[in-house]
Image (cartoon, rainbow, N blue to C red):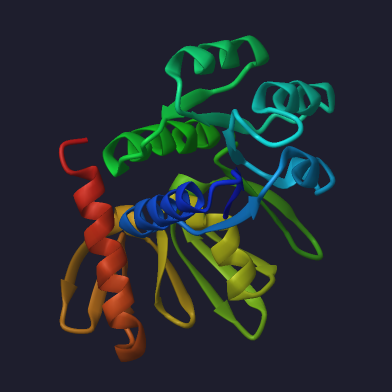
Length: 237
């Protein structure tokens, strides 16, 4: 799950940012949490290290965006910082405090989506695409891209991979949170499927790698939406 902070005192801009984030995440089947702060001071009193991306106005009441960014870097906060400003020439200074990018007001979705995509791709590059699977007798490190699907039954988690099966304990919710940035989706309450390996769907039957699974009726609509968004986002890649 991607965690985002929005530091902005103008309500109209806040609403636009949240609307654009929501639209982008829905289009790309990504899960996220976003929280708004009206001032830099209120943000600095929060657990600042937990955010992956920070959208920050430069002209804030009290501490401005540049001063806030310096304080964050002094705290060794490595979050991606994207400045939001009415004046592009001010944003250039952001690179002096290791800001990632900037967006010029008034906001438009196309430009915003490009910046957000760049930020998320940077996060993914910094994520080690491996998963540590532990049980009472073994510890295995597997490549997330090698997983066909994950099965959860009675708190037993089975990872069906190119290199065999690996078991641990946990819940579907925990597994979903770990794998959501990597294009996995639920086809029923027990199976979390890697969308990259789906080769066919016929009725309620789904072929993923060498496996055939069932798509449940309650999950079908959301699952097909996630699959269509994944396919649309990867055409030509």
